[in-house]
Image (cartoon, rainbow, N blue to C red; front, side, top):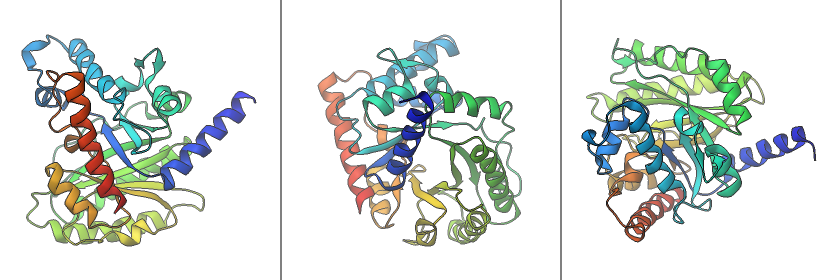
Amino acid sequence: MTQEVREKKMSSDQFDKAQSGAGFIAALDQSGGSTPKALTLYGIAEDAYSDDAQMFDLVHEMRTRIITSPSFDGDRILGAILFEDTMDREIDGRSTPDYLWNVRQIVPFLKVDKGLADERDGAQLMKPIPNLDELLSRARDKGVFGTKMRSVIKLPGAGLSAVVDQQFAIGRQILAAGLIPIIEPEIDIHSPEKSKAEEQLKSALLDGVDSLDDGQFVMLKLTLPDVDDLYRELVDHPKVLRVVALSGGYGRDEACAKLARNHGVIASFSRALTEGLTAQQSDDEFNAALDTAIGSIAKASRT
C-alpha cells in the first residue's frame, strides 16, 4: 500500500468515525491565554512555573496523563481537539495526532484561531490568523482530520451576522486545504438575549451550510440552547457532518442534562470533562475520576 493510499484510507476512516461514531469530542485545546486557569483548576499554581515554556511543559504533562489514561478510550471518545503546541509534541514517542488515531482510534482536530478581537456590536470576531495555510498543511501532514475556531456572541444583531460570515469565510479556506472545519460561534450563556440570539444564529447557520458546494461538509460547535432540539434542522442537514455542544461554563451535571435533551447533538466539553481532575491524585484516583466524567458525558451524547 502506497503512502498516498494509506493517507486516503485514514482520511476515509476518520470521516466515517466523525460522521457516525459513538462518543463525544474531548476539547483539550486550552491555549496561551486559558492555560494558566486550566493548570490552576488542575492543582498547579502559577508560581509553579516561571515562563511559557515551563507552562506548556506542564500542560502537556496534564494532557498526556488524560490521553494515555485507560479511561480515555476510542469507544467513548470520538475525537480530541488539540492546541498547536500539543500537536507538535509527542506521546510515547509518537506525534500526538498519530498517537490519538493509531493507538486510541480517536480522530484528531486542531484549534487554529488565535483568540478573540475586542467586542463590537455585541460579539467578538476572531483575531487574524497569520500563516493559516502553512498551519493547515502541517496539520494535514501530521494526520489531523479537522480544525476548530471560536468566536463569541453576546447579543443578537449585526455582530452575530459578522461572526457567522467570518466563520464560513475561513471555513472555506480550511475546506480548500483538505480539512473539515468545526465552526464555533459560541453564545455567551449569560447573554440577556440568549434565546433571541440562538434563533438568529440558527437562521444564519442554515444559510451558511446551504451555501456550501456539493460534497463540502462542516461541523458545528454550539452553546446548548434554551429551547431543546432548536438545532435539529442543522443536525439533519446533509452538509453538516456533526453538531457538537460546548459546556460553555455550565457544570458537568447541568451540561449533560441539557445535552441529553438535544437529540443528535454530542458533547465537545473542556472544563466539564476535566472537572475534578488534579495533579495531586494518584493514578487510580485520577483514572477513576476521568472514567466517571467520560461515562456521564458519553451517556448524554448517546441520548
